[in-house]
Length: 436
Image (cartoon, rainbow, N blue to C red; front, side, top):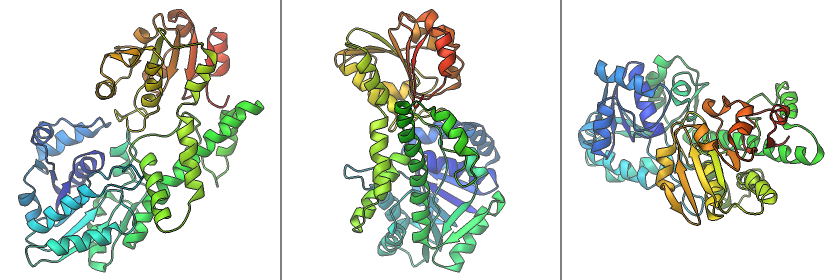
């Protein structure tokens, strides 16, 4: 089947590559000529495990193509998947301008009946508007239907999450559209849940926000554990055996980040308020997460007289392992505060440093300085304090004894509970973590 994917970010590129992998003829459309040439050479513009290998294989097979010529791409497609960004606006609502741009381009280009599928995360009711918008601007007399097909991939495991998804959600308003989408996904061999368009849109928000709630709940309990002398990891282990609760998303830390949870919780909150309803649980999750991000910095501030002139090791910058994404990453907030306090930050991350340099160029920043190093050891050498923001294997593999060996003051604030409390105590490290 001839499929076109608009947008080559996490959603669009991963979807396009995986559609080609199962046998479809796929064209990925992007506005950036340099990016297109990069992808044609088999290089991915995003860091995602296993993606480049699939790109090279499907580029070579002739099933995967890239172009900036959207008119030619959309002209005779069987289905067009929209996977462009819907960034958060200042009021928490989703910015649908990229969706609108692609929709108009489709309307002005298609020359045959076509199914338009919105994979981007959009507010409930958006697909209805997209369909009407396309019909308003149609140039040729063709039949266009719009379907909802939200993605549920996690950054760092996006390829696996697409090829081996727990379920495929499709939202359609006709049997014809439903059958075409089922046919597209048939080679994946995955369960398909078919619902209305609006229900599909809501499933995406409800699923992501539920997971965000779970994380914020565990972080709230972790903070209470510290006050009453309990261990959040023991608590999580005990909870995980209850099938009603499950074992996933029970790990306490310094909050969620990335492109989905922060944006989707705020977007659903905005949608509810617009409808005259207060989602108190979601509002609480947003508030807890905002506080949690800088919890360790506040602990360190209580311990230190000043950060002025101190060497601070920052281990991990990405919001989670397996990605170079810094959106809503706790490292951004904390390092900003450290630099404002005059700290000399030495930062290490195996893949995200180039992205971080765009936010904080190397050298003097505010009252402090930031230096990017090639190894955790370089960051720790002579450091007065260390913050762990991301649990990369390169960081988890650092022996506890190395903090005492390399740091001037073996003082560690661990936002991901990488180490055991007793392990660090035995190594002679002053150690602070979450909920323990």
